[in-house]
Length: 396
Image (cartoon, rainbow, N blue to C red; front, side, top):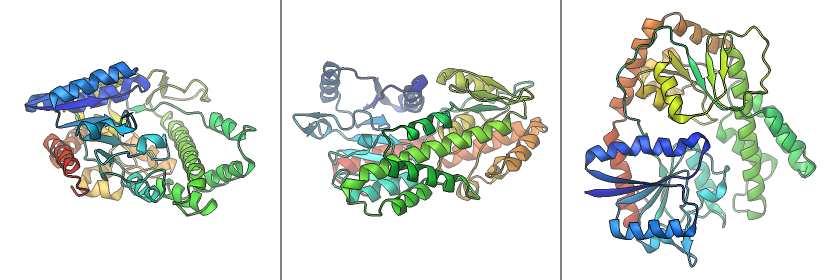
């Protein structure tokens, strides 16, 4: 029996733990011994884990978002010492928490859910701070265990989203500690990118920052500044877009579920409601009981976990799908919206007033998703990744 060790750190509403458990518990039904570990809060706990790894000889260790990937003992990578492949699955930009994107050994692989994030990570490999010492590759498309079809009476659409107040970001930029030249770049580029005739992508942000600072990714003196600017603008654009989408959705009987909405200004004539909570397991129940789920992509095209969770419940996930995603699952054209509020209003109205059709469409989309991305596929890709690491092979 093969062993896989899954490590997770702390996260809001224990999202990382619950996600990795949901994905990898499926391996237990496929003759795998799956061990879940985390969070690790002391050197003693880490030493106990390393001792356990020596005894179990796992096929690989996997972590979401890079937690514990750079662990060293006496300046040597522990995963290389143990000859144990460490696979990091990352769904965010290298500009956010850049240290988690470092590779201190070829025994650590970085798999990115977004091709734009992967391309950017390869771009900064030119620097001395972020060399590519191991495998950089696309992450497989994961899928949650599929649930039985549930048809709820008088179900409401839901928007699972914790809010970051754009004002709090502006206050941070306006702080006297922010260098004047950085402040100008942050406000100017955000204004430009927020007013495109389409949602700005991560690549748009990278190109704009490079044009404003420099396009030399070998220059370690400006690299940290560029990463900070990219991270801040990315967060601000997400925050602005979330507020815009919320304003449109509240015209309908939609439940917005998440933290941070306390200071969101309401007009008083909203048909929707806001539920101030962020519990990952409870949100699974909300998805299963919903009419459909609404998602907005985080400035990058990918199969976001909110989409995957909706599909696992045989529900529609209304989102700003790319043409590539619609080519893979043509039914998604009936539940996609563009950047303008009118597009979102139209598709919401259609789905709410045709609830029986919405339920059938959700099941049909889920069938197509699981046929395209079966569980066995991502399990196989992680095994191939571990094998490539052991052979120091950058091709999988």
